[in-house]
Length: 458
Image (cartoon, rainbow, N blue to C red; front, top):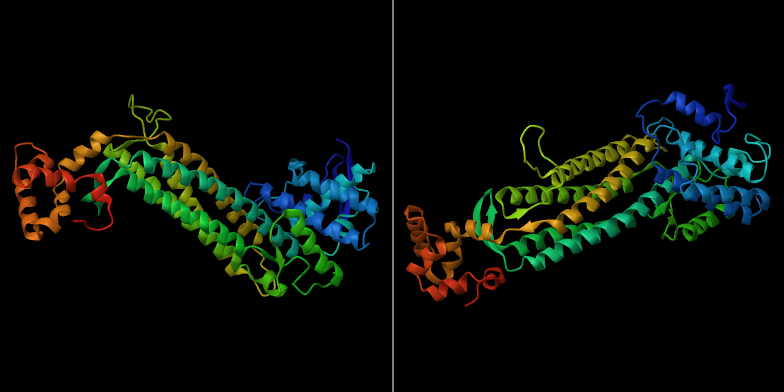
């Protein structure tokens, strides 16, 4: 295989001549064979957008000539669109606060820009990964900035997916509005409600998650781009520091702003912790709703869609595997939130050395929640209610008598409950109540509208 030689402070190394990455990337691959996963593509693409904004600012201020700038910008555009993905080979978990990822991106952009200008890869005298692609930058400002941009992009996608899930649940709320069933507390029968109301509660939970995605984005809009190594902006001209954030804002369409104190923004990553906590709230709702759907399916009040055979030994068995997988996804999001917090807490003085794990955990949580929305929405749309089973459970539950307390008092209601429990004639509750109370009154009290009205109505 044809090769080319590159050198760094440690010496020389032979690289495949066709590779767009360089010696820094190759050393990182050798140094960090840790997780077996590459850096998230969303982060790579966001880094390319940040590099483009930096190049645009440097070109406008004439720190880099138009020929080199045009080639670098073209390479950034290609990468931000998902191109050259196979060239980003560093492990997701690495030492150095993300320097290896930054260098991987710098080298690929440099070599692709050289190729665009019909020059050989590795001709760094003309376009250098550091002197040109990384001009006026540090890993410590571009990496957190790119992570925030990547997270905001995923939050916006997640918000759209949550909106579709919420709408699906609201449609089922209307579909099931007249299906009366028994509510349950402490895993025991409680008082009547409708299946529609049950689904309305699910919809409201995810509506709050939609709101939280907007709040999480707000927390991530302040970036430290231009702060370079520790937030002081060392080596970066003031004109560049003020211009580069404008370029990135225009390029991304995000309301990004440079932090007033970039030393703080570089050292402290609690904004990611807050965003991860909001994502964990969404995961909690997924677990709760998935568990409730699984239980309602077991009770026979709904039937979840059958998607695969449930057993390798029991013929015909079908399990609620979709909601079971969602519960596991929610658990993993919770673990990601914990890792984000641990990484943010472990930063030292003016830098957070654990940005790679923080980034991997945050983007994993976002990716999981996006996919979980895509799985739960069709499940909700395809599930089928069983009104007869709902009525069957309702008609054998003496707790329904609670609805009559305003009319007959607690003691009379308790006596009816005890009498119904002693009966052994197999009759249902509605029939029993009609034999003890005014049948018209029984019919009126047990109508869905009256059961779900806010408070007691005469």
